[in-house]
Length: 227
Ligand code: CA
Image 1 (spheres, rainbow, N blue to C red):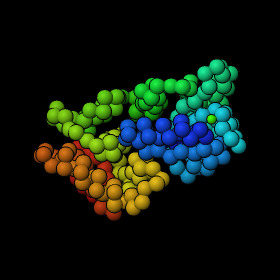
Image 2: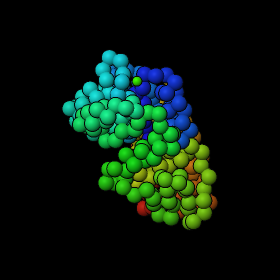
Image 3: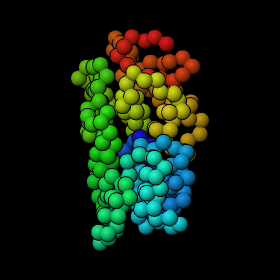
């Protein structure tokens, strides 16, 4: 999941970025409203965390502009404790939810999970491909009932594949949703992580779920391989 964090207070931005990265999200940070619009123009984010009080253009304006441009990305707005008016204006501007500062990180994670399953396809918290399951709430991955330990990045990559079963995902699509902007040579990094995943998820089992589509990318599928 690729997240844009829009927050001008460095301390809070760092706290959110660090926590989300540790939870397997790919995070970009924008420090003002113009920067936020510029980023969301070029990256197809899975969710945006948007502070209301921002330099140049406030969060309300950013959200309204996104919606006017037809960008439907889920938006979680961060508001000040006593600013009830901000919450109302935030929701009216097209935000999907809000969180009052200061907040517990666990609550931020729970809100993000709720927002990213709001799309009908993502309603289910348990993703399944054949005998492989991934629980987006507990982050438990099992194949044939046996738990499989994954690193944060492996988990994030697998979750992205499993949210789009049977679809060819190009390396640039994977890069955009699983890695953030700071990553160099991401193509190679993706291939390496696919190899790690296969070692854990596919090698011990008779059927291979992660498939290479030659010249295109990767796909997770229980259907027989054909490319
Ligand atoms: Ca702020």
